[in-house]
Image 1 (tube, rainbow, N blue to C red):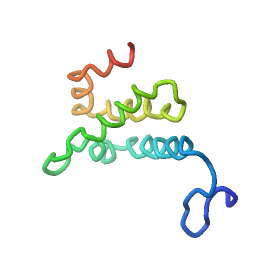
Image 2: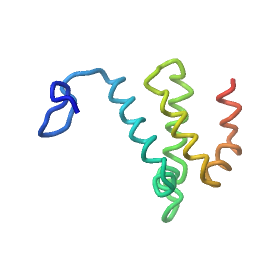
Image 3: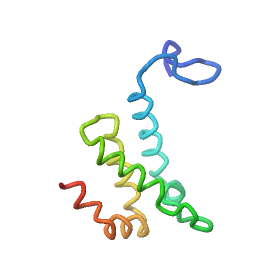
Length: 103
């Protein structure tokens, strides 16, 4: 991390717009979902399923709404990673995510 941009004690950004923070958050989620346990966690398929697919729906909704905003470019990577699990693929197919992206 560049010391000019982040507080060395807290790690919080000192300067930079909210778009940059959003992009970094999606970069983090992209890396997190590169492994199966991260995919399961983001999909919410672990445990009691109380939060099943909530994160995916929220992220995809933002991706569609802000489709012209480059801060959301990493969402495509996240969705691709989540499609590696059968539960993720089935959810995306059942909810017509592919059609939404094409449109």
